[in-house]
Amino acid sequence: MARQDMRDRDERDSEFVDKLVHINRVAKVVKGGRRFGFAALVVVGDQKGRVGFGHGKAREVPEAIRKATEAAKRTMIRVPLREGRTLHHDVEGRHGAGKVILRAAPAGTGIIAGGPMRAVFETLGVQDVVAKSLGTSNPYNMVRATFDALKREDSPRSVAARRGLKVSALQARRRDTDDGPSVSAEG
Image (tube, rainbow, N blue to C red; front, side):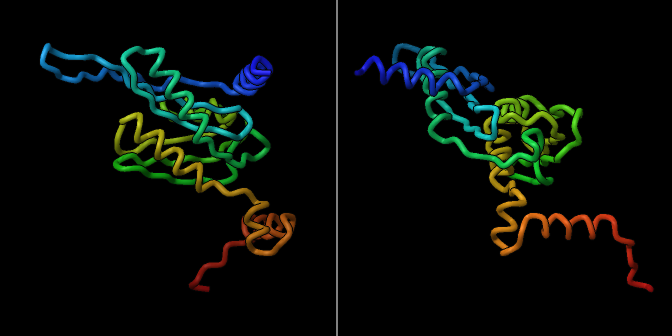
């Protein structure tokens, strides 16, 4: 029975794609000198709208990566995607000194984003997005700011449910405001 459980776990794990974002060598000063360890930042996703990140520390690199991957799988979030390829709306996120702006993009744009953010979008399954990082270039804060922005992402279905409307009515109202003539205050 234990072998069956292992096989099920391997199949479940194989659906996830993991990307190593950053490895940092850290030193602990002890009486005999320095003890070196490694800290890893990993992003994991199923490329269908679920993504998570994790941080692991160990004396060896592979062990740090394994710990980070397990932590990432425990903290996964679901992000609503439009047509399975881009975001529903533009959104901003922050964490510490890290600030990111994520913008929905038309088909064929690709992932226009810096390193740590690119890893998040690739594992999330987004194909078209324009992202800009302002402030820090620290990969930990950039990833956390990106996750903050993705948590603010809302689908038309959830907005309609919250307002007690139908999705079609909500989108019809959006088309009316986008296409309608602009009326100025001066008259």
